[in-house]
Image (cartoon, rainbow, N blue to C red; front, side, top):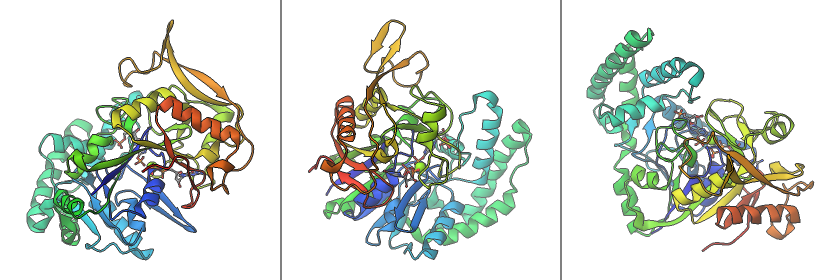
Length: 433
Ligand code: GDP
Ligand code: IMO
Ligand code: MG
């Protein structure tokens, strides 16, 4: 009856989708629990590349049931688009294997318009959101004025509520931002049609997960975003509006902690961030070009959701250890080790300096990292390609030393390493129970 959780240990895009795909082979249920279509998870299976924003990456495995939990905000237009795209790729996305929590919140065109308007008003201090309406949707949820997916069970009534919602937000858009509001009647009509299509998928996800765990099934929770984007525990205010961390998985699925088994923190072998905010180990010029790639390869560091070039840097051991602490990881999955090939020497951030003082842990959380300068350790790099390596002992010695150094810094074992985007490009480093 285990619940395994996959969590981003950094600022998102760590490769959670591909690690989920790997573990979904052994899971009965795969569930997203927080965020919305600000997420972009990529799964590569031979020639097929799946880019998922709302539906769990586990959908790629035909034997799984996939859930969207109550902690999510769901744009029905994006969800239906994703359902149609997957169906056209031959994936079964019928209501008997895809289920939506009736307690998840509905994301609307008014939220999207507000997200853009708020970002534009921040001018030089933009958060760099994905402009998918995430912040405004969670704001409505916290203000207890949001619409939940369960309301779609009565499409006509739902349409009336939608019309009222668009009128209310429209007033804010027009009066405060001097922007045109989406047409309430038109949106209500469209959402009424969405409701008719999505109604069969609605489920009590918490009850469903509980029943599955009681029956001894394995549930895999697929995190979106990352620890440093957590509303409470991230680099506030440069965060998202949900809880990507381990406790968020429990709240966002509606289950207690007693079922937890593996809590897998996914970290890249380096560091990336898309959007604004502090990034102590950020690098520029030649090293950045090497880490980011040109954009020619699907795995190069350009956002899956927005196409924006990601900021890149050396792996930050202080922030990694912080993520281990906040989430209670039982192990790490280290992705994109192949990208470090050819970089020599490699750097790892071992400590932070502020004035005369050296810190091995954050004295006051990650919100204000500006006074700190990273202090690096250097390790020799390697030149050989890692793509064809399947066994840990075949990794170059320098790569093995790098992984061991990451484990020392994180004070946690690495269980998996990935050396390419394909399913089989995974190496078991420490075999866990
Ligand atoms: P997620 O949001 O955490 O699921 O990560 P994304 O899918 O947004 O970004 C990770 C990108 O890196 C995707 O394009 C993956 O296919 C790719 N990727 C994942 N692991 C590896 C790896 O080990 N090596 C390489 N080269 N690419 C990888
Ligand atoms: P996955 O699941 C990377 C970032 C945005 C921005 C901040 C707030 O693919 O790892 P939001 O639209 O959520 O209000 O934006 O959070 N962000 C992500 N960065 N990967 C993601 O998801 C992200 N989801 C949000 O870039 O800095
Ligand atoms: Mg992503």
